[in-house]
Image 1 (cartoon, helix red, strand yellow):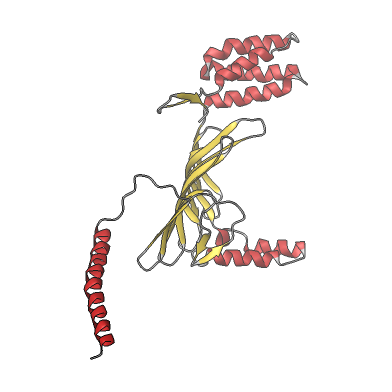
Image 2: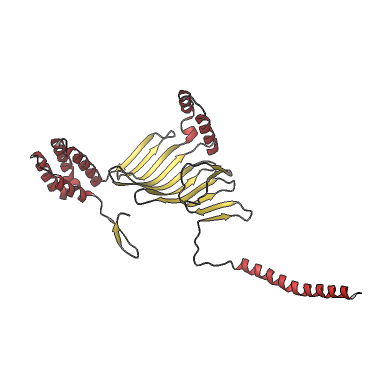
Length: 307
């Protein structure tokens, strides 16, 4: 055996002696890490994808900028709007089957928890919507909504029908084609709403299979109704003070039961209008008295303001 061959054998023995402990150490570390996953006190991310061992996506938690596309059967559904931040869930087939979303600012926004029909759109929603109208009033509606969806076609089928309609150039022909497919059989229909309306009414509304109202029970917010009527009277003051006084007279009759503490102020405003005097200051006081008080939020710092 030559000297060169002996040196190579010594090197190989040394390599084996060193490699085996190193490989054993790496294997032990891998098993230890699996048994004791890493712990983080805090993480900052834009998106988290939760997947099964085979890579199937089951949940996406993301910011608005990184939110996942709507997906049915693994096919992305185009949405011409920015999806809000939140959680989106998927079934084993790849359908989006619901989620939890939050979005908006101090003038508009909404939060909703949605449950989707497999292969289609949402059928059960717990929702809160807020917006500001043209007069600067903050409005809100919140409740539980149920919607029927067709079971003989998927959302992808509906979108394909809509693309076919858009391809029809003649407006009259397009309208006739739309009339043939329009309705619950294609798009579904609302069946129930339980919650608060923008007018402040606690409402239960039931609809038939075509979405037509069949039963509605509502409890009005009496003070909100008085405020709405006072707003109408204020709109009349500039052009017809006597009509405004007539409207306020009716409001005062209702106020005797619903807000008796305001009846005297309303009477003062009515008398001023009858005499041709300015009643804006009195009506402004009445309006402020009828508006809901600022919400107080309990937290590290107590803050009184519009939530």
